[in-house]
Amino acid sequence: MVIGVPNIEETSAYYTDFGLTPTRDGWFATVDGGEQLRLVDAPTRRLIGFTIGVDDEDDLARAAARLNRIGVGHERRGNRLVSSDPVTGTSVALQVQQRVRQEPSPLPPQNTPGRIERIGTRSPGILREAPVQPRKLGHVVLGTTDFATSEKYFVEGIGFKVSDLVKEAGAFLRCSTEHHNLLLLYAPVNFLHHTSWQVNDIDEIGRGAAAMLEGHPERHVWGLGRHHVGSNFFWYLKDPAGNFAEYYSDTDCIVDDQLWEPEVFEGALGLYSWGPPPPPSFLRPDDLAALMVGAHGSS
Image (cartoon, rainbow, N blue to C red; front, side, top):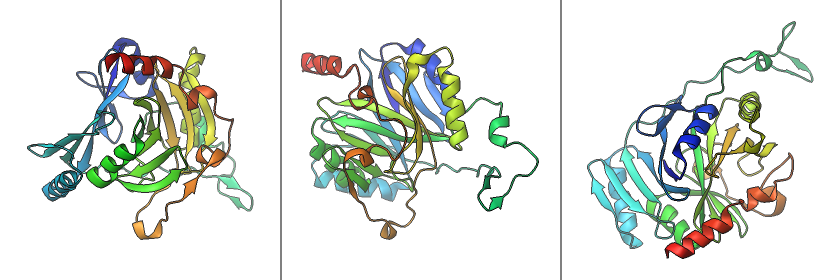
C-alpha cells in the first residue's frame, strides 16, 4: 500500500522503530510479505492506494467483468488491473503474483491447568531479546462518506467477501483466508483509520508496544486487548502523521467459505472482547475535524 504523509522523515523513523525494514524510494518491508508499505509526500495523511495479489490473468478478467457490471472504469497494464473506489478515490490494483508463503513460527511451551509443557525453565516469551518485526501486513481500515457505494465497489467489483458486519458502523471484508483484510467504516470524511501488522503472538505485541512507547508515550492509542470480531489480540499506536498502526496476532481464519456464517454485531462487541475501553480518539481521531475542513476546502 501507499500512504501519503506531510512529514515523511518523522513517519519513516516511526515505522523503522515499529519493526519494518526500509528498502528503497520510501518502501518498507515485512519479514514474509516483502515491500508492503510506501510513504510518499502529501499535504495531509491519506491512503493513496494498495495492490492485491491474484493468481492468474483469469482473475484479472473476472474482476474486469465485475467492474464493468457496476459501471466502474478500469485500466489493464500488463499483469495489473487498476481501478479506484468512486468515493474515497483510493487506487486499487490487482496484480498477478506469487502468494505470500509463511513458515510456521515455533509454538512456545505453555503451562496451563492440567497440562504442563514447560518444566524447570522460564518461558521463551520473556527471554526474547531481538526487536519485534511484523511478519506481514494484515489489513487496512478505510473510512468512507458513502458506505453503500464503497462496499459495492469492493465486494461486487473487486471481489472481497463479507466476513462480519458491525451495525451502522462498518463491514469486515476479506480477500484471503484471514478474517479481514479491509474494514470499511461509515465516516464523515474519507480517511485512513489504521493499518494492522501481524506478529507471532501476544508476547510480541507486548514487547513491540513497550519498545515503541519507551520515550514516546504519545504514541499510545489503545491496548492491550482482544477483539471479538476477528478474535485477534491488539495494541494500537499512532504515527507522527496521525495514522494508527496495530500489532495483532491470533486472528480468525476462513478457509472454507461454506463453514463461515457472517454475523452482525453492535455495541461493545463490535469493538472488543476484553481490555481497556477504547478512548474517544480511537473512535474519532483527533485530526478528523481538520481532515473534514481540508476535504471541504479542496472540493
